[in-house]
Image 1 (tube, rainbow, N blue to C red):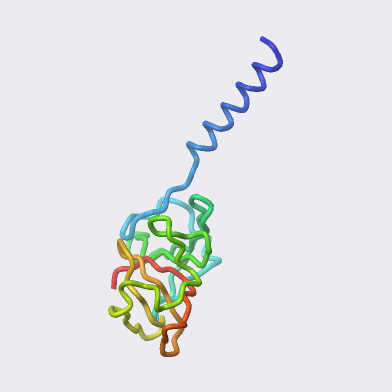
Image 2: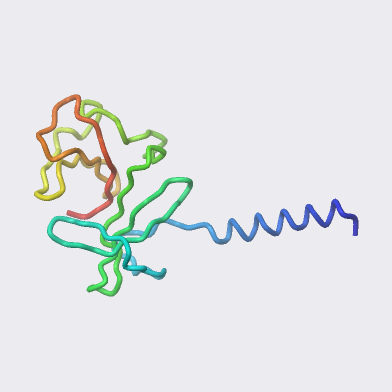
Length: 143
């Protein structure tokens, strides 16, 4: 076997191994199968949940795990500017550009939310929002 074929085989094998280990974003309510270190937490209202960090398709997420309910995925948050819905980046967009802005709601302890798609919400600060307020995070949660 030539050295070039051996190297190509190694690269293909490494690529297949890497792709098979790629992480997927869990769904809300899924049972978390991975490790939970207990070193990071996510505050949701008055509740504190252990969280894990995931990178999926180059986007960093924080996944909150409800350890009191069989390690179910409670919510998912990202502040990564690479996050997009249907190819449209969300973070940093002004409130006036969201089509569902008339459905914005306030959640005590969490701030203002604008529904997007599939249980995703654009998150804004606690202070009252205006047309120029910018999205600071995206949260996947069932209210």
